[in-house]
Image 1: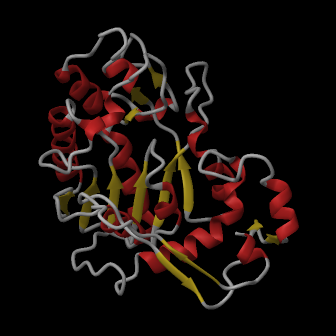
Image 2: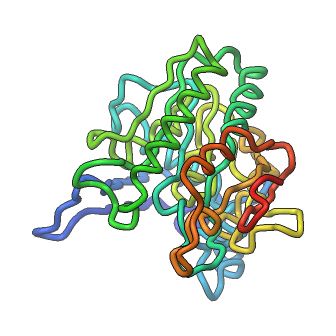
Image 3: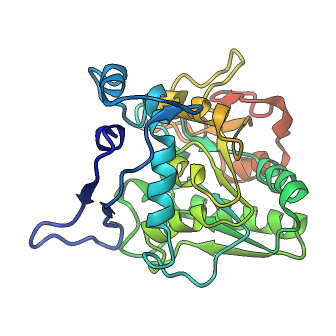
Length: 309
């Protein structure tokens, strides 16, 4: 961002040391900016390198900083490049793409509210139907999520792959019912890399949906269609105290028309499986909540009974 503010070209390279292996999960960025990138700004007001250093003094403007939106235009430009066909050649892009955080979103490690969980199926259906009103009929829907099987399953997802797969399949069935003329596809095989998953979000032609995750906000900001991002600020007494993880999206949404916040109840990992206490919900109760919870009640963070609010 300093280079952009000073109107200087730069090169950023990310790779592996000798002997390292990506284990099917890493991706490497080659950002070679021969021309100066977008000047840091907020709502069209440009900021100098000095302004940027002042704003980001102390802890740098990182993923949990509300000031990261100063880099929004740069993130859009960079992700448009990183997801371009020349960099990520994919033939089966979708009109709509949903990033589904499962795995470590289905439990709480330390018995605290860790700001992660799952949303009702109706939330995704409603958002896609809203997008159809602006962009036209959706003919293909892609779901990107971490793999359920094989050696590339993340260590901290193990133990929850069965429930993860159950939730994904149930959402696919719900989407088939709501969009009978659309093809619904799950993208999480060993051939679906991190960068290809992000590229699918960027190149979703009509809508991309990002939930309670730090994986997908940047790609969703840069999407070709409408980008719906979970609003980390809950407005009820049940609000999510760990919702600061994407504070910057509220500022970015205020001046990027196609980057939009959504509110929805979240069944928190603390409720699904509290590793510290050993308390957990039956899997069929989790599925029941996903199918039946009314999404219109707002950002309720469900961490204790009653399950339905």
